Length: 327
Figure 1 (cartoon, rainbow, N blue to C red):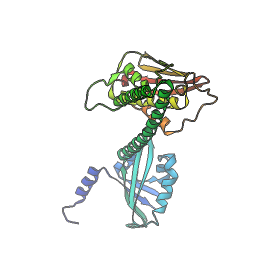
Figure 2 (figure 1 turned 180 degrees about the vertical axis):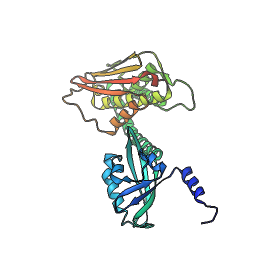
Figure 3 (figure 1 turned 90 degrees about the horizontal axis):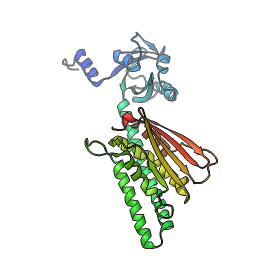
Figure 4 (figure 1 turned 135 degrees about the vertical axis):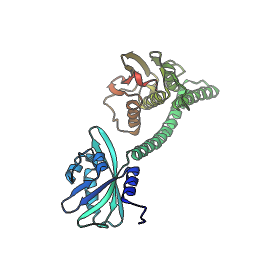
């Protein structure tokens, strides 16, 4: 190595890269780390730390995999990389452990490697996966919605021309709803009034024939920001899609009431379906749509949703923090 690469220079490079150094004594299964390593794991500085002490911080779902992977590195040739989660109080971090396998570079009974905090990269990957899944899910839902809208139009139309007009109007309303779902560029203030958003998102599901006006919206007058509008539109879109498939909006006699009230720092929206197919038991809530709905309402809306499956239809209560709505 050239003289210009001193230990000081190497230490500066390590600090710049935010790399944590570790050594592993394969005989007694103890680890030693530099100051950044102990900080990364949320442990007090010590001469060494037992592997079990580190394992206690590893996410339970990853613990056995990490243990097996480290043991396997003793016989696996070439560089290795193991990504796993650790828990620090309520915070979850993603750590990448990297080193050389097959005892390459071992000194005495000690192997060497690095830890990297890759939380940002993992969150970006999870976001990309969620976005890809959401797009696929939304395309399927759009096809289902188009089918439902066609059925609605055929039921209430007296002629092919009227059906075409009704279907075009419904698809146009659906397009306007998706315009609201798309975030506005830059900082342009409030995206919409709450009542306007709810009405536009739900308009394509209303029946303009004999059962016109079966969707009723009564909420406080307030402005909502672009992030909130996006999240709330996704929540309502999911609820309405499920209702059009299986709930009150799938039935000619079905009706939906969406009411709201604000108190202190909470906005409560009550989604109440009646007149749909009889509900004998609570359905499973394990699909991607439910996951997307939960992520949307718990994230940007800082809220929660509770389901009450009444025999006459679903009653969903959504609670959101008022201070989050202008965002």
